[in-house]
Amino acid sequence: MGSKTIAVTMGDPAGISPEIIIKALAEGSLSGAPAVVIGCLHTLRRVQALGIVPEVELREIQQVSQAQFTPGVIHVLDEPLADPEALVPGKVQPQAGDLAYRCIKRATDLALAGEVQAIATAPLNKEALHSAGHLYPGHTELLAKLTNTRDYAMVLYTDTLKVIHVTTHIALRKFLDTLNRDRVETVIGMADTFLKRVGFEHPRIAVAGVNPHAGENGLFGDEEIKILTPSIEAMKAKGIDVYGPCAPDTVFLQANEGRYDMVVAMYHDQGHIPLKLLGFHDGVNITAGLPFIRTSADHGTAFDIAWTGTAKSESMGISIELALKLA
Image 1: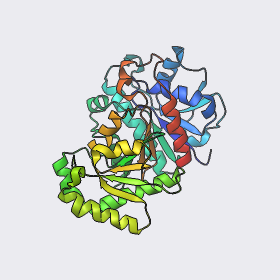
Image 2: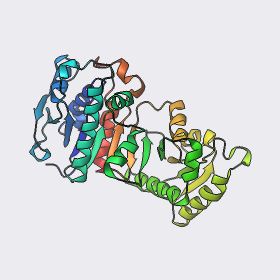
Image 3: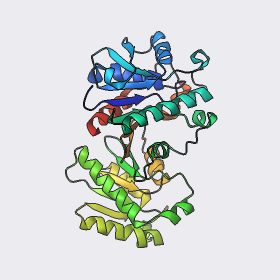
Image 4: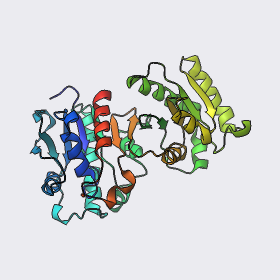
């Protein structure tokens, strides 16, 4: 077993997940990568039989230690569906959501046990998870619940723009009531640590204001004055190159132009919405503080083109490479 073995989990098996997993792991740059797939072997073979993925051997193993990483072989820890033939590509189905949840949970257990060092997950379908009775407020919350972890944050990572934010899927007013300096300083510290791990010697970090127009025309709310500003000054005193609070409407554009290496956005809308406006299509999501990486390839249209061979695998490959690097 490789010293940095990672688990690659199947998301919604009725979506693009089986396809992009096989494509990514079969590509030359990742051939022989120390990764095991957690997913339905029958579904993976069913996709392979359509001829839309490269020819590789899908080999079932019973435990991670049995994997012998060689080119042309993908090792699979089988999570069988009750009725795989009933799986309809592109359709929301409870059994698909249940399988996605079981794959995530099994990978989490392996990571906590030290059998794998990181996890790369394919896109999840929120509706499928909900139909199976699994509450899914967001990807990071699901992982944090499974690992009983408090200090985590989501990094949205592309070649040109990196954003770290706490994906708190609650109303802004409720979120503001829970905001405190300890949380802000923890996330800034995570941002600095993460950037150094991926090769930035002197990271430049900006902190977006919490209120929608904080900083525009010099106006700030109580949260910026009483929480963000003293938190930023405290982290500067620790040697971190951090700026802010910055106007959310402009800071993401400035980061995309190269002024900052990462933006810390404490509320999820201020992390996701600007990235979508900037065309965040093919980056990866990384859960700082937990060994999880998620692909975002073609995420918005994934379930309209299920099993057709048109989904990209590049982002899945990037997430696997980053998982190996960060393991």
